Length: 322
Image 1: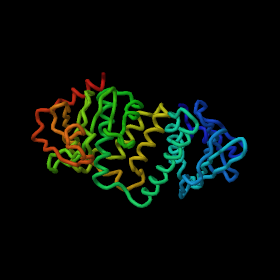
Image 2: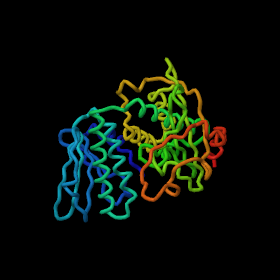
Image 3: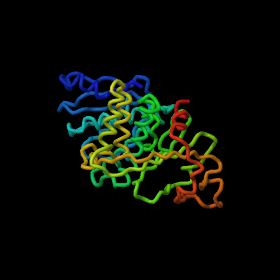
Image 4: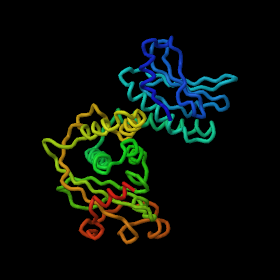
């Protein structure tokens, strides 16, 4: 889907409101437009000839004004950015709304997805104002970005494909899914007890597809990998792919990453990458082997008990290469 919102806004910014509005994502079931308000603020408008937006489900934002309008011929919803310092964030939000709702088969379905996603962004930005990622959350994100760089640079996975396969920010069961391979990414300090923390019955629910656990063991260091350096590396690999850039930026935001936060420069050495292959014999709790009635679990697996499932990272590389 061609959705280079930022580029088009930049192109017409010199003329502002007088430039009019421009349709984006022409294949979308809903008519989508970008433009500028009379005051020169960026606007993103959705229009439907058949379905109205539910005013009771429209969330409130701090720096984005949401305006609904209905008449006999068209129902519209306009997002207007009031803080010009958030243009990149606004572009990412608009891209995500268009991308997520593009999978719908009807205008009603697209608007429902749009509303759910818009509420998700409102909640995400509210949390972002009041709290930042914890150390463990930052370490987990470091592990996921490290694996993305490994997949791109070591395994030769196309960067946009790798970013599309990064499922962690979307709340999927596993963190990465590429070429019918699923990877559950774990990150821990090298000084921590070597265990795998499993948070659900579905996380290791092997279903005959290739499933691996990649454990990144980090050590704090005066120099080395950081959230800032890893994200910059991935951005550089996406330099010529605007859609991939937008998707990666969006997923970083959804993951809670704030490029202005003090933690982005924290540096670590990756001391060891351990890869475990999960098969029907791997010790785990899944829906098929727990008593009826148990729906949620959290448990730990001692790494010394699963040494027989260790494989060389090169085996995972072969799987990712198909």
